[in-house]
Image (cartoon, rainbow, N blue to C red; front, side):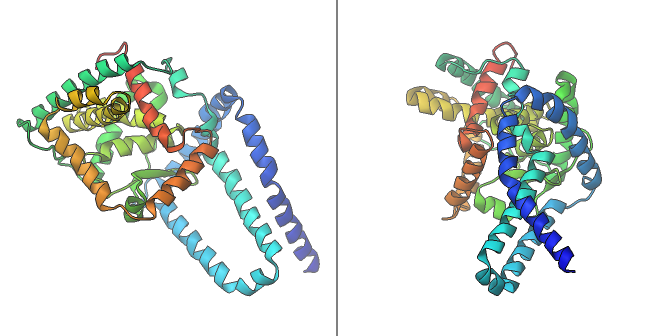
Length: 361
């Protein structure tokens, strides 16, 4: 028993000490996005993610959410039960924390995290990396026209807000139809063995300000089930984009838009056009407020009501802790090769503008 105990301590020490070499190795490998793209993102990752989606995708609830809840309970229980031992031997406690972090770091990057260092989607699609203000203005004009047209097609009344008449489950199913359509044009976005679910923690996610997330350990895409239906199709497509191995938020915003706008359903097309327009209008407002006002005034009143619906939803759930959660996520993104942090979401505008340079809207 003594020998076994000594061996256990040595293994724990070794695992804890391996954290720093792991971090250095990941940062070094991250300098070779072409290698990661070929051997991980298009090689190992599809095998691993496919396995987990096959294993858990058929289960109607989020296994990953339950695992997170269980881990939190175990951690709290450990702190309570071992509190005296922790006070007596704080270095051993620090070692154990580092050991857990080491295992989590290794698992995260093996199962999904290395995708943060793959080739940019703009390079894969051969899109430019910048856009001019005039490019943006022209694109906004086209988007306003498209958004107003599909809005009126659905409502027959420019002042009426669109109400997407589907359940969250039906939106998931229609999103899968969109991916089957998108695959015909972009085989890289082929989606097999679906695993998209409403998060058990939708209420906490709402108060944290999140629309959804991908569980990197179970490869389940989690969507916030409390979101208005107007925004839910995009979120569903976005989180599946993460499952496909695209980690950058601007890229999954773009994928979420593409899969929604390529859908034959008019409600989905409306959700996509309005979503893209909201980001582009925000970018235009930062560049030229007068141009923004001109474009915004051209919108059907019903479209503006849909925007207000989403804004009211988030405003209703504001809380003092939300900035803290956002700051943590911002730090997480920056630590994982997204230098702009949360602002990287807005970089979708460049992808949208440049994609439509030579493509009909």
